[in-house]
Length: 178
Image (cartoon, rainbow, N blue to C red):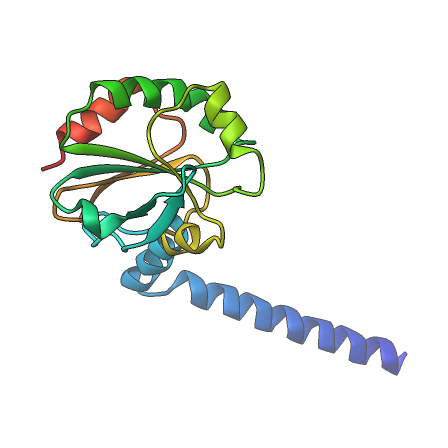
């Protein structure tokens, strides 16, 4: 009987501690809560886009900072991702209508798979970058794919679009870039 009482007291104590901790997390300052949310949701709009250097499928090297002065649509995708596959034809169409002042960079996060086969099959002509060590994916805090960042000519993130984009969205977001 004493063991049951001790167990009940212990259980109530543990539950009390859990409730108190849960309540203290809910009463965090708003700044802390939003900072936590922004780190879980990716980089903030208005932040400088982190520089990176990746190889393309053709073996060329692309460094983001070398594109200063150009608008950049930075897309994260994978070959197995259905929504990524769905937006690729419209990204290809968009790549044919943009001027020299805009660049599409599609960062593939599963380069161990047949990325070249995917690109050939879908007749993709814009640069496909291979994130072989997952560093750029981690740096940009990608939580879901596809995710696209729109970076202005000064290297500042002006917008972010999680999910499948249609052509009109690509056009609208890049028109807003300076």
